[in-house]
Length: 116
Image (tube, rainbow, N blue to C red; front, side):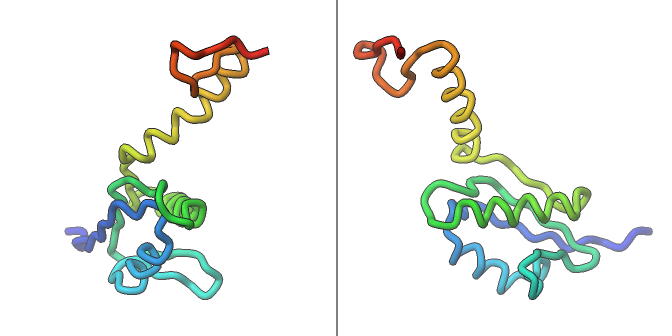
C-alpha cells in the first residue's frame, strides 16, 4: 500500500507577497530553499485554490513560484484557476483582437470609434 500523502491548500493570495511568504513559512509541506526555489516535503502535495494575482505588489513573484512548483512536481501540485486568474487570461486576447480588428474594447460600445 502506498504511503498516504499530506496535502496543503491555500487560496486568494491575490499578489500579496507577505501573505504568500507567511504561508510558506508556516507550511508543513512547502519550503523555500536558500536559492529561492520552492520544494515539497516527501509524501506531500499542494493545491492552490485560485486568485493568485490582482491586489498585491507581488503578482509576478507569486505566479513564478506557483509555476515553478507545478513544473517541478507535476503529479503533486494542482493549480485551480480562480475568477481573478481567469479574468487575466482574456486580457492578451482582447488586446490582440483590438489590434487585429481595429476595435476599442475598453470604451463603452456607445462611445467606440474605429482605431486607425
